[in-house]
Length: 223
Image 1: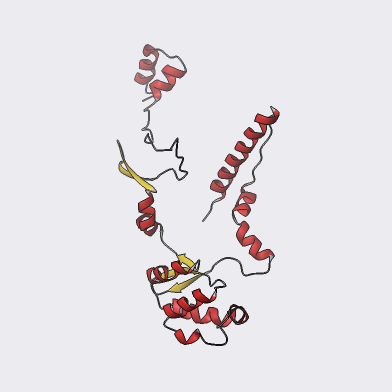
Image 2 (image 1 turned 90 degrees about the vertical axis):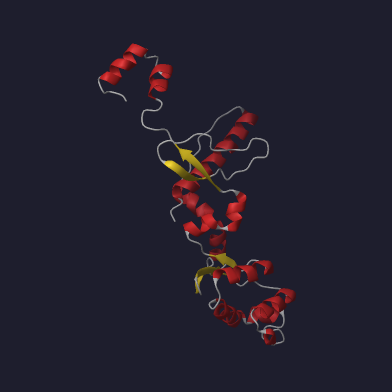
């Protein structure tokens, strides 16, 4: 997914807010510069820190019964380990010397990853999500864009809205995702039709009179 434009835009907004705050203290403005490439690196900071420490970068999705799941096996305490082994229907692993303590699980992490990974590959994304999300962060299902829009959490949050456009009909839109308690944002206008604001711009902003607008329209200069 290319997020250069989005990451740079958000970064520029943060820079503008910081510059406005600084101007309020010093009375001086300043230049703000944001590189799209560096902005993307900024959004990768967690993965970069993993790289700096020598760990594998990111949670590589694994193939499961009905798609992919971004899978990560964290260091778990004993109570979570008991619940995980029970979830996998592998209670005998609880007392296994290779996994019976946190230190042992760290020492045999490769084997533990293989066992849990082999189990996960036999389950659906929803089965894994329902079983693992109460145990801490073990990853999440990889959803298509269509599945995201139907995700229960997204629907409950009202992340998408529908508006009736005068020309396009019913249109689904992503709602503003920054929620302010006192001045909430909303989508109040539709994308304008061709020529919808011609009179407003030429007449109201540029001062052309009705006769001039009529002449331009009759000459097919404007619609």
